[in-house]
Image (cartoon, rainbow, N blue to C red; front, side, top):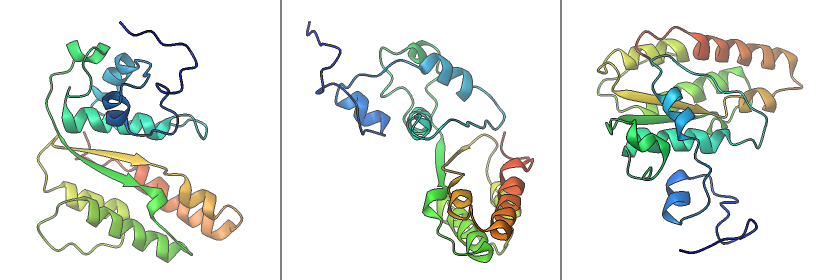
Length: 185
């Protein structure tokens, strides 16, 4: 058995935001999978709000890894005995990838990103992001897609000093994130 000291930098996952890499490289991981199981077992959308640099992206990546790969990277963790090992199609919507100079750019960028992340078979023309998502998800089987949204606040922080733009982008985000997407359950 190998022993490690508390400050063993070879085992520390500093800078790694990919759960599978942390597990493959045998880095230190504090088992939070009991909580992840409770979160992943919910049949409603869940919103995480934590301070910057507090591990939201790693948590989203860990949940993604669970849904995409099943228990492949979760051996010897709490969730291993609870999870049914079913795999899902996972779609990631990262708002930091959506550049915008104004409200029109943001709305267009969000619609383009939604169309890009979902495998759609038909042409869909809708310039309202919430309606577009509903239209795309209407063609999917229930519970067949997991949508993970990360860095939702990026468009707001980029326009923090522009009162009108900030308010309009906030309205678009509120409608998109708070809409009762009947297919997201």
